[in-house]
Length: 384
Ligand SMILES: C[S@@+](CC[C@H](N)C(=O)[O-])C[C@H]1O[C@@H](n2cnc3c(N)ncnc32)[C@H](O)[C@@H]1O
Figure 1 (tube, rainbow, N blue to C red):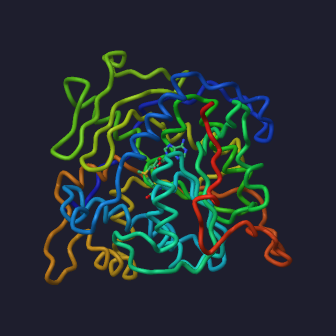
Figure 2: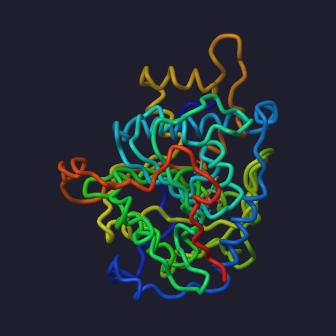
Figure 3: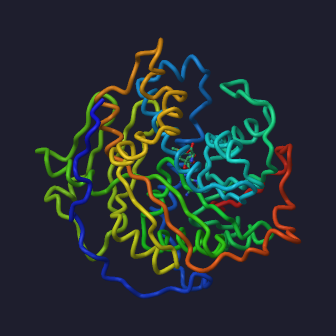
């Protein structure tokens, strides 16, 4: 495995032209998303819904097993760094509940997971209940939970009315931590409206001083790689990225950094259209919603920094991304390590002073359950 990392910052994009401030509470200001955006969201939902749970053997045979383990290590480090005992956690795009065990280890007090893919939220439910027959090691989680199926960037009722996520979750908020892990946030970047809505949702649901952690593709690296190759596609044995002919000049409009699509294929994981998220635009936009940057690190830089810390070295050994240092000598391939370079981890903090009294007389989270039935899942449909 390559330990060093290439510089991650490049100036592929200029600043956004639109600096108008929108009222995060005012959904009247959020324009309708177009058909294309909704189709994209549906395509993503169908892709993830169709992905079935793997057995432990199937998972271990994956060509990107060490990359998956590395992702888990990065998410675990982020959770370890920021989650506190008793925290209320909102997991945006929670998928099949891949982080439930990590949250349990952090001894959180309450968990709300939302995902657009019905199949994934159902898998999350069975995993939470301990019914799953895959690599579920523990039977019971120690925190109550609630699951929602819907588009976390744009919840709409069956009659097309905008359903604000902060209203859906008003009995549960404010949250101490909001997490959007493993590459879901870029699905919000198809339009400025949608990107703003995603950040407005997070801001409205976090308490002052609350933390937003996440991982997503590193636009600077993707654009840099695109410019290094002759055509519009690049990749290796485990992934490829392809841009459309409209980007043949490899120039991106500084005036509109939204909706810049490419197709991404990652073996045994993703096969979807995705959108570039220029991080400095993300940072500026987040700032408008009172979310200030704590740090951003490309995955290579993240590994370089945290792998040196003994508690995280030990965690890496246990998760096995680099083998167990003992009998298991298997480790991340160069191609998997190259994929890791395509991603970054970020931490944002909601401005303001935490209200230390909110845990006393706390009725939040009273919708949570220790056993979730199918009927307990709230569906907030983005379709008619
Ligand atoms: C790679 S999975 C990550 C799942 C989980 N966060 C994890 O780390 O294991 C990406 C997830 O994002 C979800 N997703 C994509 N767009 C979404 C949206 N608009 N609203 C809610 N979930 C979304 C997908 O359904 C999928 O479960």
